[in-house]
Image (cartoon, helix red, strand yellow):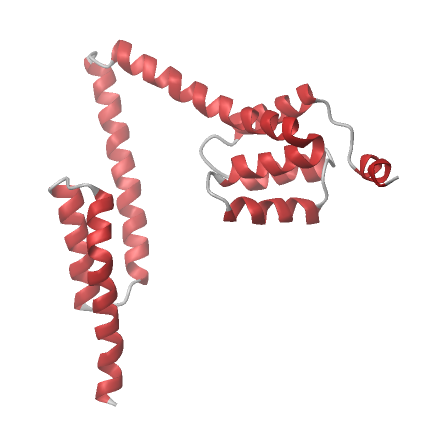
Amino acid sequence: MASEASAATAPAVGLPRLLATFVRLGIVTFGGGLQSWIHREVVDRLGWVDDATFLSGLTVARVVPGPNGVNVALCIGLKLRGAVGAAVAVLGMIIPAFSVILCLGYLYRSFGHVPEVRFVLTGLAAAGVGATLTMGIKVGRCLPRDLGSSVTAVGVFALVGLLRLPMIAVVLAVIPVSVGLALLAERKPRDES
């Protein structure tokens, strides 16, 4: 009786349609905006799940390790078709990005020595550095205006960006220093009052 009720509430979605939907979403959202596109498609357009179910899946997706979009696809596939549906939805999300990266790798290996290709790749790398720098400046504006924060930020930049030390090791080494500086900065106003 309970299985009949749950079968009546879940729409009948075939595995090929589930795969095609998530492949299309993986293509359209390559690079960002994934959760809103998935919501628009599976809640608003197709009506496969309701808002509450989608938000529950999104909450779980943000807590578990892995990319949120892939995790949302897993939750929706699981809800619609069980474990097989989850695997199909995840595969649909991964295929487009994997294919693009595979093609780019092949093209780089085949044509990376061509001066024009190197020129384009150098420009793309510069754009990536510029985007990262812009984000760093935006985040930096929100940081406290004290010497400790500035020295920490410049130090991490110098160690990772200029000296090319491994970022994980640098961050792990800087965490205790940063926490110590924050505690000292917090203690200072209390001592003055």
